[in-house]
Length: 317
Length: 317
Image 1 (spheres, each protein chain N blue to C red):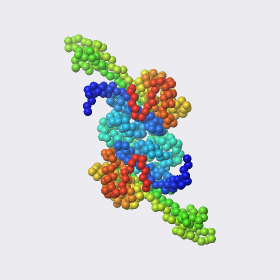
Image 2: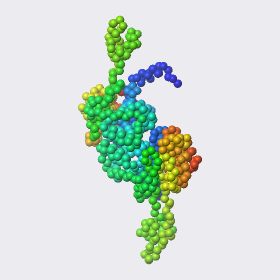
Image 3: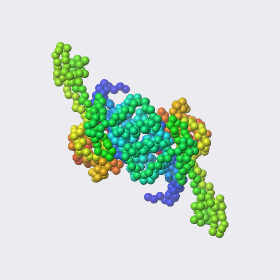
Image 4: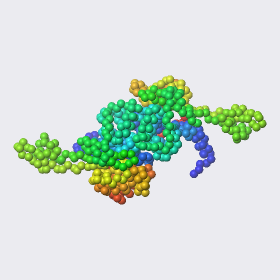
């Protein structure tokens, strides 16, 4: 049954505006207690990106009702198994489902080695092209830009070289003022939306400021996992809308966090506070914690607007 | 609460006799419809072996309540992802759980390459030793023998070199006759059980046949996946107690089965019949089949004693 025009309009608007993150796995290296290894599905105005891809991610995607054929890029933070072991299976399923659109992988150089070896030994000749991109391990280094977002690297501090990702939405077109709509010829609407003044056939000009309103502010999402507490990230994360940060341990395990180069929940809260983030999302919980309550409570003491990632739950950026 | 002696005795006897297979995954390459990729847990008198290890096998093992730290050997039939992609994660979890007992892997030479590369790039230094065994791709070639079973290879016919496995239980000790028990000194019981005659201190001899009864017959389980229909296997599979055979398609898809070197359910039934197997277990169902009913019905037309593998279900050999 077709939805009424109002609902369709609203759905269209929602999709046009969407910037959200579905957390598919919230566990650390040893999966347990119903938690799965790391994977975040990022949807920016109906373009899908996957950040990390632990074992079983393809199943999580299916459970969340996400058409993984629509994923355009996959970013892998580092080469610990709980962040990439689901990638080969996902690529294989994309192939078996008949994918033909290119897939872009961004991650450590070793990722290419692992995937190419596995394609070779299984004699799999993909129907789609697989592009491998690497980037500098430096905060601010460009990872990719498309017509939705600009993604830059965050140089994290872990036992292996580990990269966080900052997704910054590109500015959307300016909004035409409804009360001026009748004065803007159809042919000129795109250029006016792009910020240009309107030149009329009689030679007169209407300044753009009289015709348009500012577009909604751009939004940003950052993914920081795995990493030790790294206060110097605050600058790069300034005013990020949603900060996902690992919180493997509580402060009681601070020594273990330091030794294994992970963060405590309090440290994640501290970084969110220093960066002036709008919201903090925690995950990568050690299997020693039955629930995330203790971790969330600890982070909230420092940064009240803290949420816990949950398998299959979606968060707005 | 401790169980009463009778129950304990029964449990002990059950464990001492156990030869069973838990099917953890019944799907083909493209997992769907709640099916998972291939993995069979074989328990022979409390020694655990894993045959194939598709993505997510460690989770299936947890769900089935199986302590995967107790697995001593893992056999990988071939290098298609749905048969081995869960192995690296399982090894990693064994490591994180503190395993120190050696683990034996048997499979294609490329398996070693894939695992060693992944250990290297994740800088994982296992606390336990990992032994890689290869074997000839020839029916009857020895894979390993321990004090429970002798496992030999079955040269299957697939797009990649693919090996089936025949688990043949080693003969158990002879049973002492209860009515003769008083006449057998304690020190001589092991040798009598092993089949020797009893020499008494007075120089007389009691033939073993008067003191013992035959042990229960040895049992055999065969795993054949992935493979095209291969009638010549019948000889090697003669009178096997439980034959697991892939049945990716129904006869309606026989051309596709031939092209992809898989079997139809009817062909699996045919092989079970030719081999004189006692029971046939089908799996590796294509995602096109909503239920396995159609496949089972087809095989039963040829070989009535056919069962469908199910996720987490255990079958007695």
